[in-house]
Image (cartoon, rainbow, N blue to C red; front, side, top):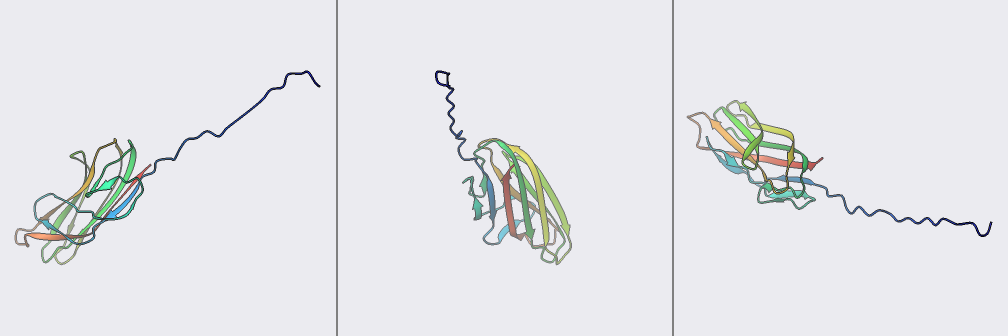
Length: 153
């Protein structure tokens, strides 16, 4: 079959580059004093994972806009008085998720939140806690076992 046209086919793999991934898991390294009746930003200073290098100074700042799932927990010592403890996630100064639990005297309180939300590049996520103790209680509590995970969906 000589003389017939021959088609040449060439191919090369399409290079897409690495897929940016976000997975952050951070916690407190020690107990934190929480004053009563004041919103307090939680200190998260022990990183287990920060795959996108997006967490610093107790704040998560995404490098890519997208849908993120956050899970957070704080435990607060109650001392001898009953109290309500509120936990909130704040993005750009606005509360985007919150939950609260009322505990009994002598029992510690654990509050969790879980939220899926859209975050833009450069927005910031932090956690805050509010301890509403009885008037006769001590002037502060201690937060411990605080943790935060963030995953880009």
